[in-house]
Amino acid sequence: MSAAAGVIDLAIWQLALALVLVAAVIVVSIRQSLGLERDLLIGSVRTIIQLYAVGVILAAVFTAARWYWVLLILGAMTGVATQAAVSRLGKPLPGGGWIAATALTVSTAATLAYVIGVVVQVRPWWEPQYIIPITGMILGNSMTSAALAGDRLQGDLQARADEVEARLALGFSGHEAVQPMVRAALRAAMIPTVNGMMTVGVVQLPGMMTGQILAGSSPLVAIRYQMVVVFMLAAATALASLLFVRLAADRYLTAAHQFRRYLL
Image 1: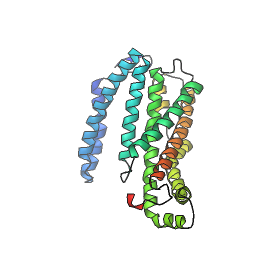
Image 2: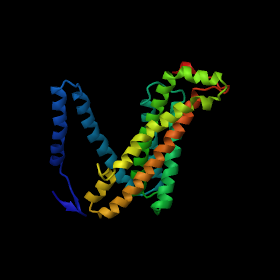
Image 3: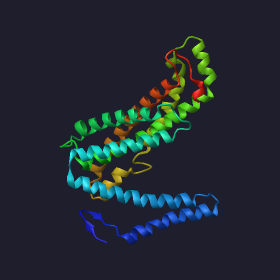
């Protein structure tokens, strides 16, 4: 084991020891008849392969330090996040790919531009050391919140379809008729973020803060960066959820303010 720049290097045998933790989970799954052994094994193998592959790619991008390579990586990340968000919906959504791509692209681009250009003031703006990890955090959280919002919206529209049609019959516009479901979906998507803000630093030490401390940064520097991350993710998840739900809700309404119940 060696140390460089305050970081303790991990040998292959130490990573192998970490797999013992997964083996313990597999034992629990077997003893409790959970049936998760195969998924845990596949998940462990995929974790190793995917992270090593990403590490090799990022090392090359960091070395090259070219803006077009950075944009290519960001585009690929957005594409994967879009597909993942759509796949998590309970039912297929017409135009769901376009909706998810729009919501994630706009929310990520807006939040990233503000954080990189105004808050952190990275120079050059495409510095991969900053922009790729920050984009990853924004996309990951936005993807989850958008999927949660979309799934909740579908569930509420299906369960309250009669209410929507009754409101339309009473003269409400399409947007007004589905507004209670939209509001509930947004609230459900934002609750995990808000709960995280309530307990950050008390119940858990977030990943970025922990990583910086392990890398040798001052805890005071680490917490300032973590504060930026918390506020950044709150804005990104709210914007992604809002855009996704608004665009998705429109898919269930016609231009004549009729409810497309058959899509549910």
